[in-house]
Length: 283
Image 1 (cartoon, rainbow, N blue to C red):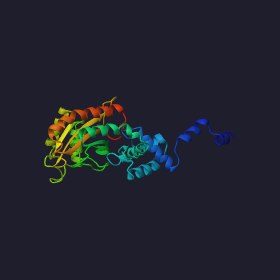
Image 2: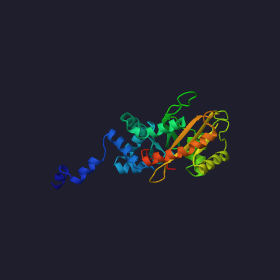
Image 3: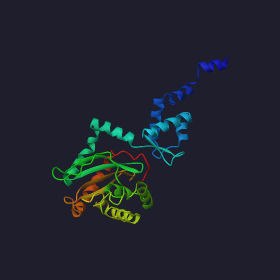
Image 4: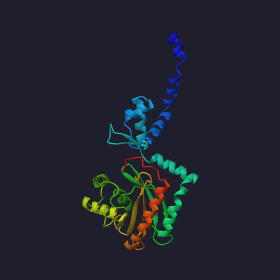
């Protein structure tokens, strides 16, 4: 008899556990995304299964689907930790833009673009990549450099990439560039770094001046400067801010003059704390 009573009336604690453990496919999928959002360093599949009380086999199926859809990434292949990608953040940015919330940052980008007369862009790390997510065009006439957002920056030859690489140890930076590649001989500008030694020279110069400077590296006609945006509280590198334009209009001397303004703007963005915390590999 006692066993029957227990079966009909489970303890309140057991009921709570049942509610906390997701059961449906949609509920479990969202629970995995929410769990990984709280663990920037990622989690192994065993921890995901244990924390959410989802059977290991079901957890494996769901993480595989999420990886195929681009919402998560597994480091190091089988057995590696799972991390969120920037896809969820991209969806959030789209929503925020439709609500007007990103207007908090856009005025600063617009102001910098007006002051410089050139293209200003904001890029956020996504694992081993950098993706441009926001921009403001300051040029009103003449030649304009105005690429689409969502493109991935080439690390070795863009001011954006060099600024980000300069915020990490040399060995890590070199490995990331080797993974992406320096590019074919005729793929980028004539001054693009083509070796580890040339890359390190550019990174050391970036650290010394406080911002990156590229002339005829990404394209033979382009000059650009870039700076890392750091968290006000942790000093962690969260994103990059850059200015780019035709060298005829943005010679090296003018780029140096704009460098100080770029650094100030990056600091202001970091203080606003509206740049999303980097959810992939920390610098």
